[in-house]
Image (cartoon, rainbow, N blue to C red):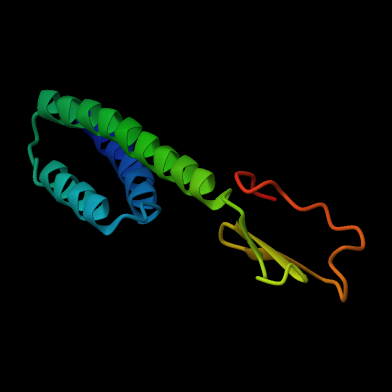
Length: 128
């Protein structure tokens, strides 16, 4: 009876783990996660204590996977917040590009015939 409960719990947690592994974008980390999942899957026993311990480890491993996915997501968003700005040498054209993760980019471009007519030029150490 207890063994069946442990098996049911294991199957649910296994599905969660596989979903989280598929969300890991770093292929090296993904391969490592798959290797550990294979080790967990290789623990076959009818002993309820072994099943209980396997499930405890899987729950711990689920937390590690979730933290990994969350950390990678935060790092990706932080990297994507960088804005690239560029002035043309004659100061008549300005372009700014901001990447949007998984969606594309915002691009702003301004052109002027006479750059002295109202541009606010950044100081050499500033970015726009």
